[in-house]
Length: 107
Length: 122
Image (cartoon, rainbow over all chains, first blue to last red):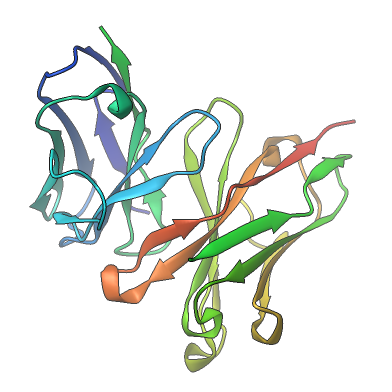
């Protein structure tokens, strides 16, 4: 199974801060990775697919990069509505595996 | 508008069975692979399994934690996805989401249902 190591597990940031979340795959997964945002009591929402493509309707302050084993989600200027938990998901091989999540909290 | 609505969750005793449903609308259900994902209370997301479409013979994949106990099926005539859960364990307690797989977007999950809670407890 491919292990997805996501870091940090939590972070505190202020509105306007630049935030970076990383996922590392235990083996190469090309660009078969997505990023999802989840708010309490809600279903996840796709932000990024194939590592760097922005989901329609998602603000351009979100961006994804990486390929192979190292991937990054960046929020260029954190907004109040961005406080949530973020997950990466690899769909390169079965079983699909999520990162452990990063909870972004208000500083 | 794409809609996925899960139902069938509830309280069940360990060793029991439950069948979840996911009603789909707003898209051509038969074209898509469909997945189940779960989330235990206060925990992260866990992929449960997948059913492919008719063109791919409705074949399925499962996580090791549920293989042999859970079964995914679909009825394209009813635009519905199912998760049959047998031999339930307390660790199966979770919110279960169905998700639409988008082959054109790297096989990522473009749409999710709102989830249905399954509680396994005596």
